[in-house]
Length: 169
Image 1 (cartoon, rainbow, N blue to C red):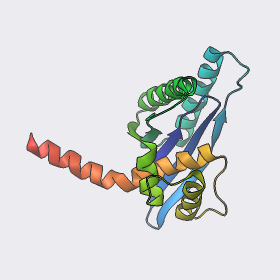
Image 2: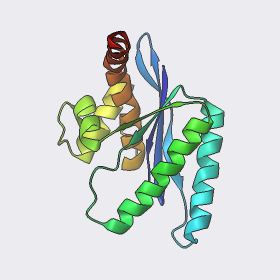
Image 3: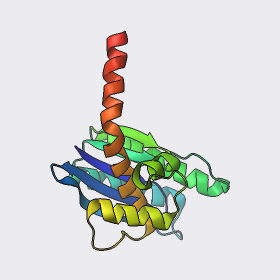
Image 4: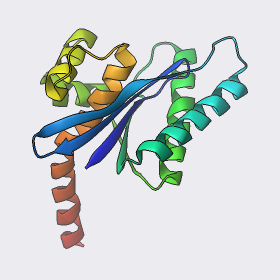
């Protein structure tokens, strides 16, 4: 299974492509897509859309795991994260990918074993799980890789539940 994790954001949209292999998860690509805060919102959204479309066409993941906007105290930040998340979902579906969402707590629990882990703990666990020389930076990139790892951890149970639900019908 090949999963692209996306930590949506308008200034920095993290991405982490992780492939399940026989010897464990392996990073294929980790980074961030940036847009200039000085540009007008429609231009930034268009730029983000084009970059995500290109990334999806280049790496061709099976699944795209996106962070669910669960709680934001800053309404302006929540709006831009929501807009970026919507673009990521639409582009993933257009590319033929399955789309799943996880809350930050679900990701932290799956990757660090603690739903309240801090950014540094998540970065260190991503480094360890992927066998990287150093933690991914910035944190948005590490969070995106953590989303992909989270889906790899939860996918078998999700599949069993879907099969069981299908049998129940």
